[in-house]
Length: 495
Image 1 (cartoon, rainbow, N blue to C red):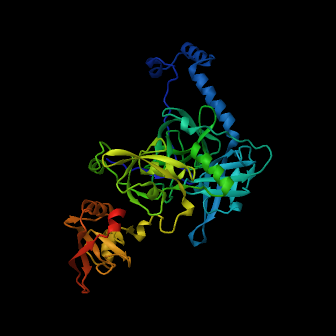
Image 2: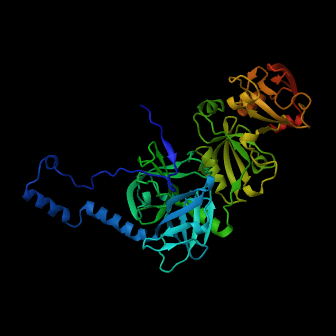
Image 3: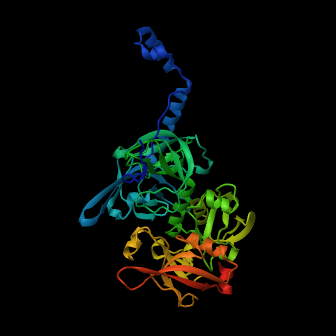
């Protein structure tokens, strides 16, 4: 029986689960576990367990020290926000008090979804000693799900940052926070995996995903609490769980400290997080079939499906169908990995980038631009308003069941719906909105990639046949037409 698993942001926290095994070098005879113990045997075992220096006691003592040094910095957060119908919704989560490298004072780091859309006066921060504070200022970055709250009070204790980039799979960690509102809770586990991306986090749109996976138990209320290493330092902020039941099932996710710390410092210095940009659209469905067509022996890196004009990518010579293998000396794992590497790199930095093109590696140099200063015609189009095909002067949208129903087509119809035709396009007198491009030559097309590939395979031809469907004005439907697109010399170069 198959069970579905969902990644959840649970009441201000994403949940992480852990199963702690026995061991630490102490082995009990199997018969002792199966049979009742006599008094002499019981006393002997108590004496052995109380001896100093056993690996179990040393490990337990270390965990207790870590918990003791970290607990004063861990806080419980309650926020109350208004929702539809004038009702109020309470969100609970956790946080950790930290200091800043560039700004003086004390700051609580938590998840943005814990304090999302909440006025400062409706946020209460509960310290370990029972005091309750309100934040003096709140900064949030939804694209990483990180929020920073400035607080002020005497006798505050801040935790210290650890280096998440030095963590390896198998390293032991503690998760701290207030699961189900139970403050000062500590759970134990290991780093189960690194670099988890492409997670669907409910309604949240987290752009920069590079999660640590842990089996340390995290439950609703843990969101924003710290993940602590064996030196008592913060190496992550707990954010989400994968769960089919809504509770801890051993798979939790934390934002790594190297990302959280960068976001915190930028929020405090600039009020927002600055992000770099290169100006491409990436293929999030890059698979082994496409890799083989591009003469790659396996899926690696990320494929470029569009290069925006007047962008750093265009100026660097990056092309459609290039596969980015390496960015600034880091091997690229997938499209989300490249998004992270680019957006978190310094703006204006000159980067060496290795791409796969025509069966060989090519090295390009690209200068990163500021995402907030994009030219008006360079921003990546939103899927719901179509995608420009600049070589043809069209904006198109792949058909789906919802669109076919609206334009009176059968549900099985596939193709590219023409949303607009530029006046300067050679097709301006031949195509019009609501036309459906079904084929290029005799090659059916239903996605932008298929259209680009069909145009690429006919790149030596000056005239290309397009098969379209157009509404015939009657109540019954569409008529098929053939349209000839004459490629301009500029279009042949710009593809």
